[in-house]
Length: 265
Length: 289
Image 1 (spheres, chains in turn purple, blue):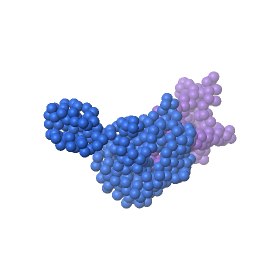
Image 2: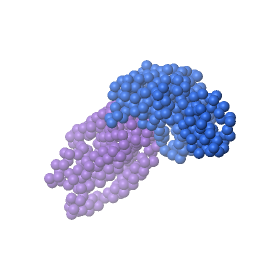
Image 3: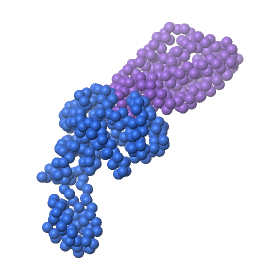
Image 4: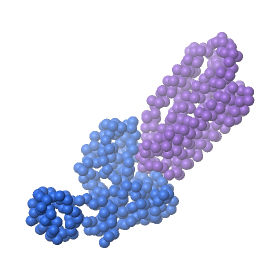
C-alpha cells in the first residue's frame, strides 16, 4: 500500500464521507427517538392496516424491543441504502474516474505497480466504509443509551452490524470490480449503481411476501438477514460468510483484471 | 536504452502501429516524428506499460515494458501528450503529492525546475492555463532526475521563450548521458535536440535517419517581398528555382545561396520569410531524391 496515495484519496473524499455520516446520524437519532413500546403498538396497527406498504420497506413487523425496532426501521433500508450509495460513489472515484480523466497516468508513471495502486484504492474504500459504519454504530449506541438507558442489547446490536459489515463488504467488492474493469465513468455508474439498485428493488418486492417472496432467491440482499442474526440463527452467519466470499472474489478478480488490461491513458 | 522490437498493436481499420522496430541509445535524443494520429502516442503507451502489444515487444534498460513497468518507472520521466491533472488541488500540492508518492526527497530540484520555467504553482490546477499545466507536467517528469525520458509533444502549450528553456534542459540532460525519446509533429521542434529522427505515418515507421541527413534533404524555401510588382516580376525571370509569383511576393526554392543572394542584391527588398515545411513535405522530398 502507498500511504501518500491513501492519504490523498481520503483527503479528496472526506467531505462526501462526512455528508453521509451526517445524514445517517440524523436518521439514526430520529428513528431511535421514535422508539416507544407504546408507539410500537401504533405502528403495528399501521402494519395491519396496510401490510404491503410497510413490508415494502422491510418494516413488516415492528417488534417490541429496541433492537427489533432498529433492525426493522434502520437495517431494513436506511443503513443499507445510504452506505450503498456512498460505496458506489467512492468506488467510482477511486479507479474508473482516474482512468477516465487520465489522472491515472500520474499514479502509474511511478515506481508503484498497478497492483499496489489498486490495493491502496481498495483499502481506501474499505476503511472509509467501515469507519463510517463504526461511527454510525457508535452514534446508535450513544443515542439509545441516552434516550432509553439499558434498552439496547449491545452484544446483539454489534452482531447485527457485523452482519451488515459483511453485506457492505460484498457491495464494496462488486462496485470496486466494476470500477476496475471500466474505462468510462458513465458505464461504471450504470453497472456499479444499476445492479445493486435492481437487487434492492427485487428485495423490496420479495419483502411483500406471497408469490413474490420467492424473489428473495434472486437478490444478494437476502444473505443479510437481521431477524435471523438477532435470533442467533447459525444459518444467518453462513449467509454472511457467503457475502464475504462474494466480496473477496470480486476484489481479487477486479484487481487482477486491472493489472493485466490495456488502459486508455 | 530503449528498444522497440517488431511492436504491433492493431486497432482495426488500419489504425494502430505495425511492426515498429527502432532503438534509442544512452546519451541520445531520438526525435519521434509523425502527423497527428500516426501512432506516436500508441507507441509511447506501450513503453509506459499502459497497453500491451499484439505482437513484438519493447524494453527499457533490458526490462520488458509490459511486465516490469514499475521497476522501469523508478528511473523514467514521462511528459504525457495530454496532461490530465486532478482538479481539487493546487499546483504546489500536486507537486508535493507526486514527489512523496514517488519517494522523491530532493525538493531543491523541484524548486530549481519551477524557477527555470518561471512556474508559480500556487494556484488551483483547475484554473491553470494549458501552458501552466504543461510546466507542471514537465517538472513532474524531471523531478526525480530519471535516466530515461519519454516526452510526448512536451512543448505544446509553451510560449517560444519557455520552449527554448525546455530545449536547453533537454540538451543538458542529454549531455549527462540520459536516454531521451521525444515525439513531435513538427520537425523544427526536435531538430535542435535530436541526433536521430524516426518518422512514423499511418502506424508504419517510414524512416529512421540522422537529423543532419534530413536537414540536408530539407528544401529551403523563402518568400521574398519586393517594393513593387514590377520588381517582383523581373526577379522571377532570374535563373533561380521560382515556385510562385504572387503580387509583390516571390517564393523561391534555394539550393545554392550565392546566386540567390546576388540576385536579391539588385532589387529593393522589403521582407524575407522562410517558408516552414510540413513534415510531409520534408519526407516527400527526402524520398523524392
